[in-house]
Amino acid sequence: MSKERSRLRAQRLAAETAERAARQRRLRRRHRLRTALRRWVPRLPDRRTGRMFARRTRGQRAAIGAGVVGALVLIWGYAGTLPTKLALSLLIAAATPVVVVLALDRRI
Image 1 (cartoon, rainbow, N blue to C red):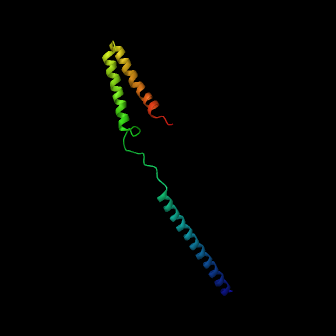
Image 2: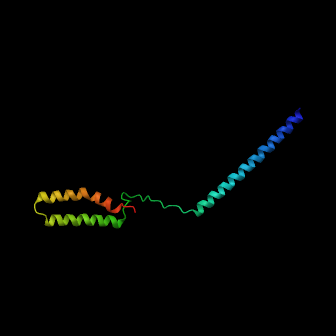
Image 3: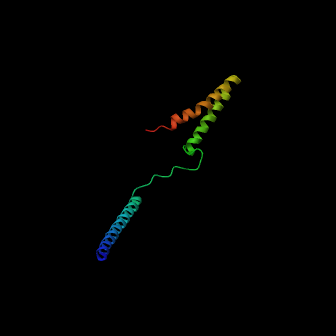
């Protein structure tokens, strides 16, 4: 009876070691495949810049600022009365974000 149990135990241990070895081979193969794929598949660049206005380039921000300043210069130089100047200035302040989003965030 004990010889039979030891034979069965030996068979069980042999099956477990074979299964463990096969599992390790599969894991090593999967790891090699993943590292090869990581090497060959291009990654998307990291879009985080750490800046507050990362959505716009420096040139876009400069153009927006120059446009707003130019519009304010035109308003304060050529508009008639003070209430008109203030109203148009407030209109520029309120409309600038809308125009910027409509003009620069278009995706084709």
